[in-house]
Length: 157
Image (tube, rainbow, N blue to C red):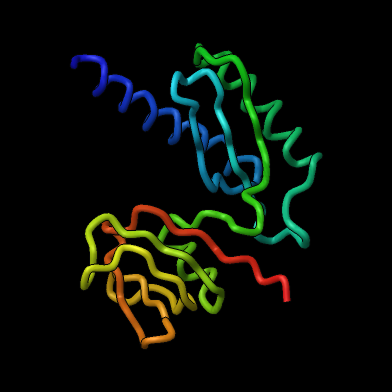
């Protein structure tokens, strides 16, 4: 029982440390995942102002810097993976919900709204701390704190 809060603190601390380092390189930390035993660290980066998104050279640069950081910070891991978030990128921060307004999104909420937890529609942005979506059945607003997972829906048309 005593280990869970410490692990949570370390995970939060690692996220903050990585976010600072990655943003210092001119990239955005989109997401951070750790394997169940913490042996693999997956980092998803973006560079919003770069046409075509991040490439292999960007990932290699960030990987090199993060590897050195993890060594200095004595983080125990076996494998580091750095990649782009992909076309179905996660949307997490309020600024992301604004940035991707006008695009299709899938959202899963923790506590149901009118018996529903999954929504897909056009992202309209953030209004008074709520994420607004246009669904086939009309508009809905979801509390940011209640969003469990949100991902863009790629448009292949």
